Length: 444
Image (cartoon, rainbow, N blue to C red; front, side):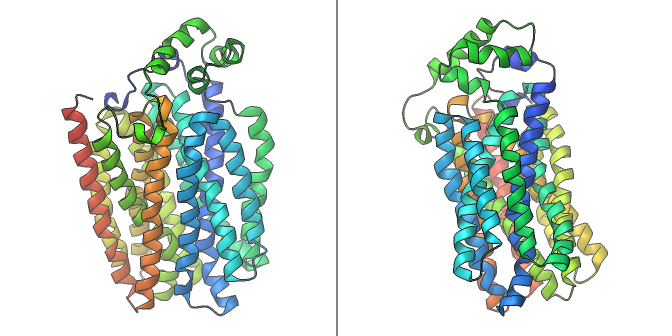
């Protein structure tokens, strides 16, 4: 995937075999992504039940969906730049603690106001975790496997959403909706000690920040036992010395990066608008169309499962082909799959097929776009670049559920609402194809 290679990448990492260290980083970040996916999606699974218990109209949950996504946006915008100063691991630990604690507190919510507060703060933690597990996985992955590792790691997100959908039906039936948040809160808190002892800091970050050699050497030896530590450090010093100084967000627009950054932001905004509209409203819309809640949740779980398959397939294709061709085509195809989902009616076979194919395109391509973003920015601003792309995308993710709630309150049919999601999917495709043209003209 030459188009996504990093110019100053160190040869030690790129030539290293995929060993226990890289596996451990990818696996731990995969688990965080799973928990992130479970907690992000959990409110959509329980919303119909809470609405029933509290005597609310389904459209009342538009602000609840949106406030959690606003938290994701705030976390991505504010804590991602902090990771470029204080380290990926530090921010990952803090963010995991935040989303675990406040997911647990959500189980105690007794009013809409409490639900709003807890979902917002949970979202802050979720939004801060994601850019940093993407950056960390990318920085330990050799160039030949980087997109594959990031996409496989990020598969944890839709997989967590899928598992959440499958077990939430049982949890709600057995212990009511509160139990979904108890599970979503306890698991991240139990993971914290494991992350503290087993998750390494980014070795690229340590070199960039001038950490002493005795902190870098053990990690380098785990990457390649025969590597020279001094060679490794020297190989990254050029990147450190050539990194532009100043507020890292501004660097996203310097040295010819402005069109790349803006086009990435368009793609993220439009696709996350579609993605979060579907994952938040699909259970409610399908229930309103006449399906039992358990089958409505199953359709959403199928969408996320399609995303897992899509991410793995598209990740391997990105490592071998042009990422812009692969992702642009996937976004375009997702528009057709969403239309299939809209016209499925209550035919369960068509709905499940439409949901799986929509997830393949929407969720799978978004995961691939995460890998692309991590690759186009240098180490010094990587977490910032990924975080701000996700942050802008989260604004789209807020708009999607809010618009869905407004239109649902105006008695739009479920079919019309789902069909509306075709438009931003097409725009995302155009943005990625245009980005490919910009990168080719720049000779990258």
